[in-house]
Length: 166
Image (tube, rainbow, N blue to C red):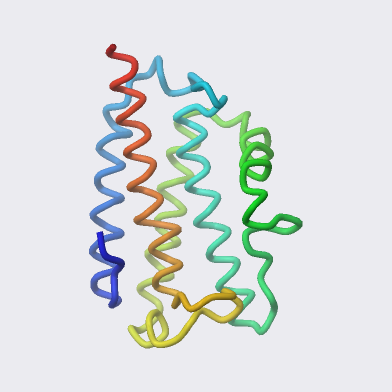
């Protein structure tokens, strides 16, 4: 799927993918919600993870816009250390239940949509995001944190459901 190239495209794809993941979440079996897979990741963990990455992205944007260098992907971590970072994140979020993770995702989605709506097309796609360290504009980063993450989470959740049926 090609990346969004305008504010309208970004709003549309973000809404569409969030609606899809909400439908998957709505129908997700209660008995599977906290059940870890072979890598010790539960469906709840996947939902909470997406919430966290939206929050990270919004912080990166805020830091870059303020002239600070964002800690991307996170303070003390490099991209090649994501496995360790995600394991630490799962441990930190281990006390969450399904409803809390779901509520957090809905709130983070609201903040992401507010962010997108607050910027014009030029601010989202006119230049690389300040502090991003690459050529991606803020809109592309927002899509990666939102719609793309929603899509991959929904895919994971559907796969877990299929596995449980076999």
